[in-house]
Length: 305
Image (cartoon, rainbow, N blue to C red; front, side, top):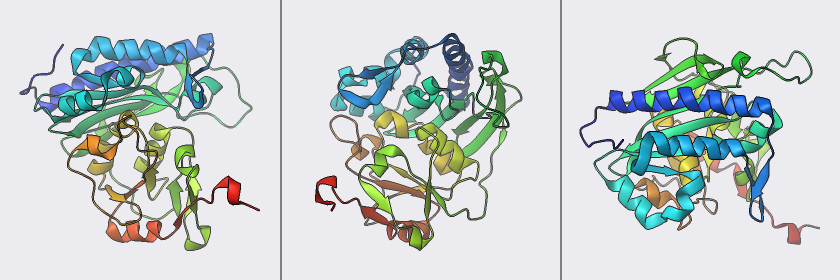
C-alpha cells in the first residue's frame, strides 16, 4: 500500500506501530527456535540471520514501493534513495533487525525499527526492543518468546512516546516520554565509531554501549546517556532522528559543530554510509563543544609502538 501525500501523520504512525507488533514477535520466535548467523560477504562486521531476511520481507509487504531498508538498499542506490526521500509523499526507512550480533547471541541490545520521511527528512518513527528488560539476577537461560519483556519507543509530530512490551507486543498503551534532566557523564560509543575515534576520559566523558544503534538510542532516550555519536548508515540513523528531535537533541558535526544538511541523504556517501564522518547527538551547542573537545582521531595501529 502506497502512503499518499495527504495521509495524516497519526495514520502513518499507526502503520508503523502495526508493523512493529508483527516484526518483534516474529524475531523473538525465530530466535527462540535457534538461528545460524552468517556474514554479509567478506565484511565480518556485518552479521546476517534468517530473521533479518524474514523481517525484511515483512517490511516490503507492509510498506511496498515506498520503502528503503537495509537488506535491499544496495539494489536501490543513492540517487533513487534521494528521489524517494525528497517527495512530499511518505517514504519509509527500515532496519529489519538492528544489532544482529546481540540478537543472535542472546543479548538484549537489538530491535526492529522504521521511520517515516517526507520532504527529505524523517518525521516519525517506531522502534521496538522486545528483549530489553533482560533479567540479570541469574546466569543466562533460554526464555520463551512470549515471556520476553521490552520497550517500544516512538515519535510523531514532535512528541516522543514509550510503552512496555511483552512477547514483542505492547503490554500497555503509548504514554508521553519526557527528556530526563541531569548528567550521567556517559556518551554512546558504538564499535563503528571506536574504529576511528578515541575519547579523553579526563574531560569527564565516558563511553557506553550495549549493541546496535537502536540500543544506543534507547539508552539516550531513557536518560542513561547524556549524548551519543553517529557515523551510521542511512537505515540506522533515520529511525532514530525523530525520537532524538522530539526529546530536544540535535545533530552537530565533529569537530566544527556544523549543523546537518537539509536533506537526510546528504549525511551519507554513495553507499549510504557515514562511517568516514562523525556526528554528535547533543542537547545544545555548548554540550556539543564540550564533547567535541574530548574526541580524538585514533592513532593508526601501524604507527603504535
